[in-house]
Image (cartoon, rainbow, N blue to C red; front, side, top):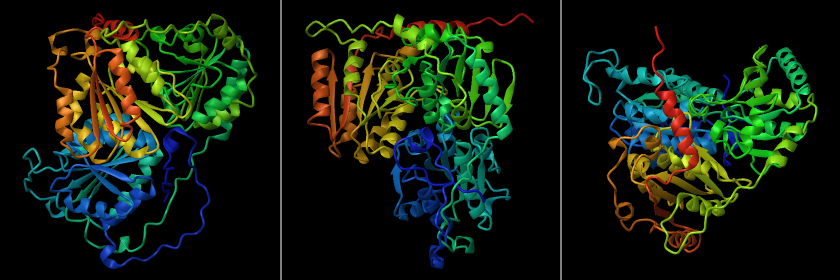
Length: 600
């Protein structure tokens, strides 16, 4: 069967870089193993290690305990116990963003239904997450028995039905004869489709030897997908003909560059064609911002300064891997025309709202297009003519209340190729979007699904995968209250993340869409909470800042004396201190949400 090759263990290698491909390997002679080790649990553990998973984020429950024993016994695998299943799923999401694949393990129904939200988010972001559930005893299937951890009906399919809409493959392993095939198919499908999969394993099966597991799992790899050559040539010809006639074309990268493994091909095309290069907001971090023709984020009315003007005034634009939803289109207000656009999806190209070409892989298309396209720097020259450098925040008076723009001025100065930014859903979307990423600096946020609280688990997972980077997480107080517990797990894993807890007293992003008393939250003693979670175990350092002087001192400690600690910096800002982009975006999204019904 087609089989997955282990992704590179370097940060973001398999998802954001080039396709890892089906490289020839020397013949592998599988090693027979002793019958007592020839178990389902060992096979699953070995498979996870082979595809690049070194950490599984788990919450124990009676249905998965024996399976967890086997995962712990695997030398190349670490079991990371999380405080709840939602955070375990978020952590697997963050891990997959860095490592190329992630995994979580929970118990039947009470755990499975709790992790659903995180798996749905991973599905929306095209992340291969292997969700493993310890299921009922195999003898209970097909009986009329009622089990605990269920809703009280003799039907064990409720959890499976829930997962069917948010995973690309579901394996229910309740006998050993086809367990090997189901597990391997699930793992390879996750990598081929770059989507989550669901594997349920009967609680009585992991430790039982079976002949199908009598050899070391043979290392395997995915056969690379290929383009339809005639379709590719036709798509390139039509696109080159269209773009070579344009006066001031531009190119914009979208979030599906990641799943198409076409980030490098996109940049190579920019090098050849001379077009200005922008990204959609959800593609930030996928394209190098130090590139000489990078002009910023295209986000309609709230784009980086001078970017929207260049994009929307162009007579042709290539969108590579875009997602146009109500958020990315700022309430459907983008000033774009389909007849000017080349839309390149991972396996499809549409030229100027006209001919469409299927079975054409984005990476192949961009590389082939680079050989046929004429160099045209007109739009970039226009950008340079109108560009005026950004202003800097007004100087703070001594002990003046801290402003958000001053906070992010200092966060900007912390960034390097050895850091990564995790931006929580909320105003951090907009403030972090304006950060200029140095070469090698990681960046992740969850825009399509936009689940508040995602960043705590995702920070845990990303930091666990990217040991070579110090993670800087920007989290609002409202979001933090949803998932705060797993800062505890960061301490257990000895992570040295810097968390900026931005305390403005509520759900600020919701306030700007539609305000109400429900957007005000109970204020916590966040420093006291962190000290209670720390409880003298592990390395943790906290600070509460209200002005620029205190912020500078805290950052100095976090990056100096306390650089080996998890650093939690609570930043007190005014409840109405938001980015101007959120104000504009919120009003437009509010208008889109409140459109009256069309007359019938």
